Length: 281
Image (tube, rainbow, N blue to C red):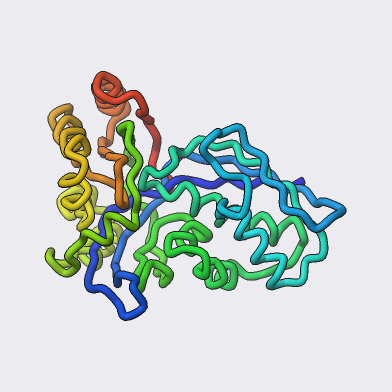
C-alpha cells in the first residue's frame, strides 16, 4: 500500500498570449499549491485491472478519470504487468479551477512510480504527464512555479510569503474548454514574469498588486455570480480577491489568522462551499 497527497493549486497570474496552431493557447502562469488536499491510496492487484474507488458521486471511476488514465499510461510506458487499486478521498471541489483532477492524476503518476519501485525521476514523470493535461506537470512537482507553453514547461520558484487563503466556490461548474473558446488572447499585457520576480523577492504587497487572470473577465461575463463573489470578498477585507483558473472558485489572501476567520465567516454568509487554508508553495 502506498499513499499520496494531492494538493489543490491556485493561479497568482494567468496570461493568455495567443492561440497556437495545435489549438491550445500559449500561456504564462504563476501557480502555487494550497493546503486543500485529496488523499489517494494505491495497492497492487493480481490481475491487470485498474479499479478506482471513491465515495464522491460525481467523480467517474472509469477511463474518464484522470487518475485512471495516468495509471494506464504508466502501465503502458513502463511495462507494468499487474493492475492497481486506487482509492480517492475527494476533498478538492470538482470543476472548480483548482486542478483537482490534475492533482489526482499527478498523484497517480507518483504513486505508481513508488508502488512499483520504478525509480523514475520527477522530471520524466512530469514530461510523460503532459500527454494527459496541461496542469498535470505542475501538479507532479507541486510547490510554486511559472508555467509556460500550454502549461507543461515548468520553472520552479521559491515559496511565497506566508498567507491565509479563503476559497469560495459558487454552486456552478465551469467548462475550461468553453471559457477558452470565448477568450480573445493577448488582450491584456502579461504579468507573470513580474509576479515571478515578486515571489523571488518575497514581496507580499507586490504579489498582491500583480495578481491577474485573463480568464476572469470571460467567466464573469458568462457567470455574473463569480464577479459578485469577487466583489464581496474584496469588500469583506481580502488583500486581493481573484478567480482561480477558469473558475468558478474565487480566492482571497490575508496575512493574519483573525483576518482569515473574519473573511471565512463573511463568505459563508453568501456561499455554502468555503475553505480556510494556508499557502503550501
